[in-house]
Length: 97
Image (cartoon, one colour):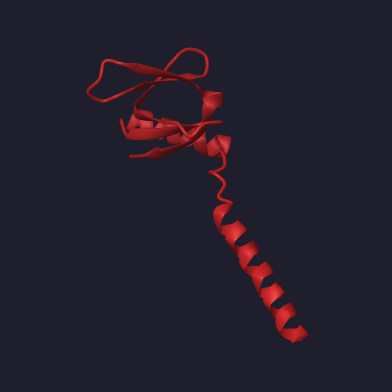
């Protein structure tokens, strides 16, 4: 009987650990700086529509990139007159849409 109880406790503990691992989802890490520069250069030269994820938030911005002053980027949203302004250090990752 004690073997069954210890086996159930062990099984319960393993299930709880797996459940915590499954739900402990962390966001994507920041892209390496060299890769980020490369992707930004490609997006600007080839006029790609990109999604930019910002550090510290789950917010993303979608648009076309253009150079701004002093390590900043302008993100022009298609079909809108609004232009976003992003500092290079705020970018977590960049992906093509």
